[in-house]
Image 1 (cartoon, rainbow, N blue to C red):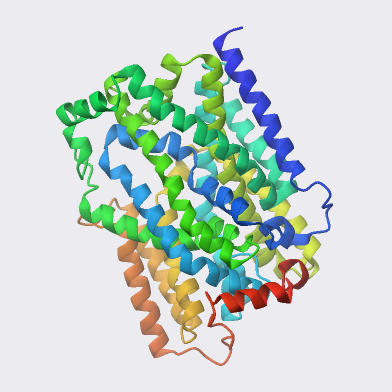
Image 2 (cartoon, rainbow, N blue to C red):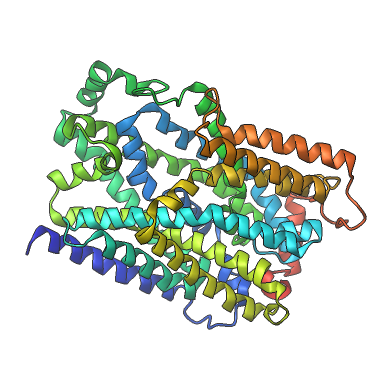
Length: 509
């Protein structure tokens, strides 16, 4: 049997197992759970499932492709990923329980739901849902592309990119529509076992196989590739110290309100699970050093990779020296690192539309109909991303340039709005409009970074200033919800009261 056939067979077996595991997650639950059961796992996931789910969202195909590619092209600047995630988990220790408490108190299932409730305007939740979808669709497309590249590479070209893209869409849609967040959490367990095992193996194997161990490898980097070890990295990257600091800060703040992160928060059984999770998650970041280092190792093994080929730096090492069965297993780990986050992205888009947009239609206001509408949107969103991958791949890639920086502009509206009751809807909306406009203007005119500073954080400063100025000029009116301020966002006694009250989304949303 050829190497391609062996690797492809292993991949196929694991993909079938992935769909089966996702469907098994909801065995015996029937279709009675409603939107809350599907979108946030009935708010019943324990600390272990929350950990693997949120780790699965953070460790995507970027970790195998982009992180290795950045390590290959630039070196040190790629460490911003480790910096912002670790800082983001620290912020999440405070923010996660706050969002969980507010959502559980009022039976909410996502950020658009929270915004609509906080400002007492359902149409505002719908507007934010549309805006967030624009920012999230590129991530689905990027995961489809990432998985396609992985599958085509590990099959030694026997599976074309186009078929690989379709497989990514088919497998993910196959279980997420039926099993929702709970299925993603179960698949995350399989994914994390494979990721930890394969990266631990590669961290030992590559330096020993291609060098005489880490000593020789690191000595060569210091002697021959010194620029890769300092900011701004190799070449004229523009990713200097100011960019590193401002990007890490912006992303650390943004990751805690990213819709996929919030889905993980709201799926927790209690707030203590989120606090423990925030403590444990940084340990997962240790794995991120492996593809970064292996990307730099590829500088000596496969020199001269340019453009998109540099993203294959890690897999060039894998396919060059390992037997086909090992390539297949490593490819499965990388593929699952696309499937899990892609599933959650599709899930939150469906939830936002089912809950905040389509629910404005009178006959779609019941739990079961909102769930059905959300599942339909999942298929539509995935299909749209797949079509764009085939027809106009660069369109969504260009949108991805503003995805994270654009999502950051929701920080004042959501977080400040929850902790400061005086923030008016006019102020929050004005700040959002100005912030998103500033991000688009800076990024699409090639001015990111601006004098070495991340454009998104500059837009966020302007956003916040406008929100405060408009609120001062036009204070919150009597329509603002009196219970909007989260007074006990991280109070364990309040957490216990909420848990005992049984106010779950399945019964109150």
